[in-house]
Image 1: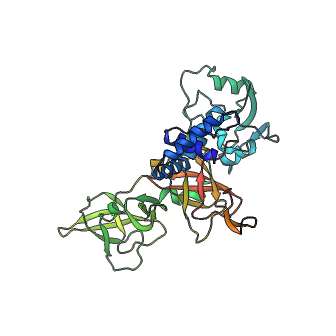
Image 2: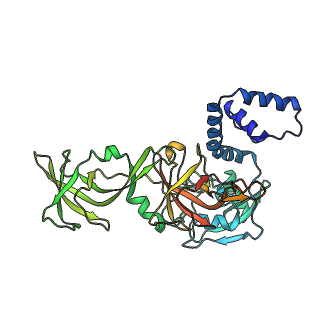
Image 3: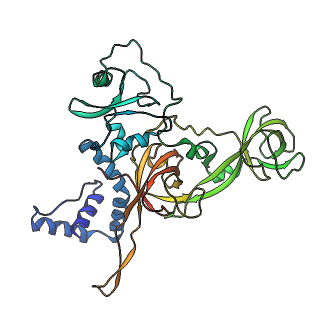
Length: 402
C-alpha cells in the first residue's frame, strides 16, 4: 500500500521515479503522503494508475543510461569468424545474455560511414579498451587496431563508405520479407476513396501479369505505374475499440494505358505477387515502405506499454520465428530494431487461506520480439525467442535491465 501511495503521488506530480523505501522515513512523512492521497479524487487516482502503468516502459529505458555496462558471457568467444547465414541477433547472443545491448559493446570504427555493418568472414575479437570490454573487427592489428578505429587515431583523408549489400541482417530477412515489401497499414477512410478494380478485359476470374484490367474512380495518369492492393485486417485499439489502421497487401502492379471520360481507367498488369487481381481491389500509387537497410537491436524507448494484437499466418499462437502485429507505432516512439519483452497474464488461483478468493498471479515474461516495420499506430515484430506460445493480448514492455 505504501509503495502504491508513492507511485500515485509522483505520477500526479508529473514525475516518475523508482519505488521508494520507507525504512528511513518518519511516521510523519507517511501520514503526510496518506493525507495527500485522501484528498485526491477517485478520478485522479484512476488517472495516476493509468499513467504509471503505461509509463513503466519509459521508466525502464531511461534507467539504462545510469546502470553498469552489460556483462559479457563467461563462454563468449575471444575470436569469432562471421559466417553467411548469421544474424546480428545470433552473434549478440554469443556474447551477451541481453543481446539487445549489443551497441553498448560494439567498437565503432569512426573511419567508416556505416560502422555497425558486419560481413561474412569478418573476424570479431574481444578487447579491453580504456577499461571497457568491447568487440570489434580485426583488421590485422588485433586489439590495437580496434582501439585506433574506435578512438579515430587512424590516418585517413576520407571516410570510407561501406555497402549494406551482403552485410549480415539483424534477423532472418526471409522470415519478414513479405511484411517488409507488400503489406502496409493505411487509414481505412483514405483507402476507401481510391479507385477500385471494375473488371478484367476478358472477364477472367483469375488475372496475371500481361492481362488488362479496368479501374473506376478518380482518373489515373497515363504512363504511370500504380499498385493494386487488397483489403485485409482492420486493427482496433483493444482498450478503446478505436480503429487504428487497415492492413492492405499489394497483389499486383499495373501501368495505366488509357482513361475514359466516364471515370474508367485501363491498366496493363506488369507484375503480380502470388495472388490474382479481383474486382474491388484498390488502385493507388505504389507506396515505399522506407525500410532502413540496416537496423540494430536495442531496448525499445516507447511512450507506453503495448499488446500483441495479431499473430500473422496463424489462427492460434506465435513462437520463435513468427511475425506478430503490435499496437505500438511511430506515434508511440517505436522504430525498427526495438526489442520488447512479452509478458503473459498470470493465471487466477484460489487462496485457500482466504475463503477460496480468486487471486491473479504475477505476469511472467514469455518471449522477446524485435520491431522491423512501423506505421503510425501499428508495428510488425519478429519473435526472437519464446518460452511459451505467444498469444493475442500478451503484454509488451522494454526488456528488463540486465
